[in-house]
Structure formats: C-alpha cells, structure tokens
Amino acid sequence: MSRTQLLDADQAPITAQPYFADGDPGPIVAALATVPELLGPTLNFVGAALGPGSVTTRAKELAILRTSVLQGCRYCIHAHTAVALDVGLSTDEIRALRGDIALEDAFPEVSEQTLIGWIDALAGATGAVPDDVWIAARAHWPEHALVELTVTVGATMLLNRLATGLDLPTSDQVTARLRTEGFV
Image (cartoon, rainbow, N blue to C red; front, top):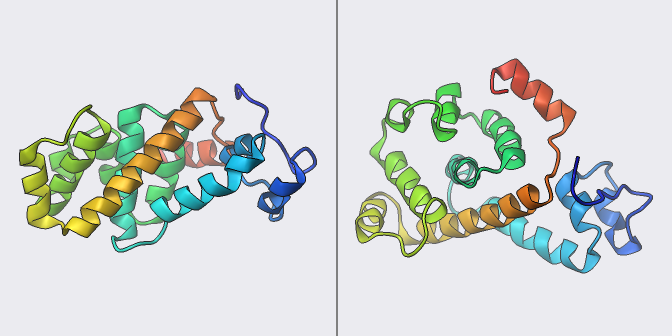
C-alpha cells in the first residue's frame, strides 16, 4: 500500500488531467499528481534523462536497472526488469545486474564491464568516482556518453528515492510477468 494517495483521473487536478488521458499513467504520475506544479517539470527531466539519446537503449537500461538494484528500489527493480526483457537483455544479464549471478559471467565485453563499474561507482558509493574507474570507462566510452549516463543514473536515483520513500506498488501485470519469467 502506497504511503501517499495515488490519484486517479477523477481525483487529479485539472493541470494533471492530460497525464491521465490515455488511462492509468502508473504510480509515479499518480503520486506526483498530488503536487501538479512538480509533475510536468519532473516528468520532462526524467523523460529526457531516461529516454532516447546518444547512447543505446541497452546502455541506458543497464544503468537504470543496476542503479535501482544498488539503491534497493523494489518498484524500479520490478519495473525495469520487465523493461530490460523488452529491450532484449538476456535472463543472465538481468540476473547479473540484479546481483543473482556474477557480472563477469553475463557480461564478457570489457566495455560493458567498465560501464557497470562506472554505474556502481556513481550509484553504490559516495564521493567522487575513483580515477581508475574514470580512466577505465573513458577507454571504452566517449565523454559525452558518460555524461549522459551519469544523468541517467542521477534521474534513476531520484525516482528510486521517490518510489521507495512513498512505497509505490508494483502493478499486478508486472508482478505476473516477472513471476512467469522467474524473477519473483
């Protein structure tokens, strides 16, 4: 049960109504609708940070799912396990990102190993990213890609805190799918 009221289309303020036009927009929007002045700016930022950019959808999903795991966000782990399946990550890759199997077993490419090291340094620790992690990441990823992925990690952490702090529920559809795929 969510710690905050999740508004539906009938309860949402008029300024939030467009987000409900296509049906249930999900618990993040339903929670943010209680503060409509934050709804648009937050979704615009998150959409830009998590949406299409100069890096591949695969790289973004590695960043989103791994960050959610490191932050312990049940809602985002569930949601992005389903998204990871949709964008073509293998079951072993997803299990590795979730910490169920060794990362090296699922990610043999050094470029992806260094990306995961970058994500881990950003989302799993405090302080500056160590120089050795930066040097390794820069050997395989252009600077603009690391900047974009850093924003992706930061936006994911924002959503992780929102979803965890408000105890947002996973939909029955996502739970059923993850159960079918062996992730719940």
